[in-house]
Image (cartoon, rainbow, N blue to C red; front, top):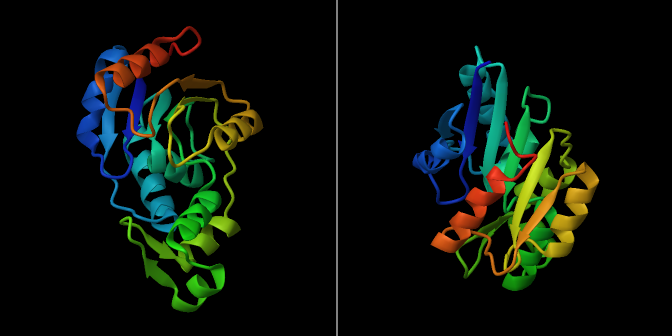
Length: 202
């Protein structure tokens, strides 16, 4: 039985990060997806085409996705042939995150609607088109999924991630002291052990 693992990075990441996961999936082909999309409507087209192009000939396809990569995956691949997904710090309520960013930036919904895009002081550009798309395209995800979350995640609250995990019946593992970006030696060791947990076996 041939199995494929597709690694989907978060913002600022890259496909080369997939190398880390090869020893964790020794019986699978592991590849990283260097997507170009920066919004969910472009991602939907790009992600579907990519999965179709690489998954032919494999009996099982697994996703390992980080942050916005997990959000784009859920928006794009809900009807695709995926055996299981491993989500690390997934963005599961994009509307809430955008509204939080509007609050941090002191931007009202009326102002964003009028100006369409507004640059913030923390490096993000708020977009009315993006917010409208998110509201009109809620996540519909029924792929068997396991979620890893850091208790110090500054973008997604424990309440939000717990509510989502319960909604899709996904086991949720919380690393105390973990951040949104799992990158320190301690965090990566925790991540590796999480993937190896009983029930996570391929």
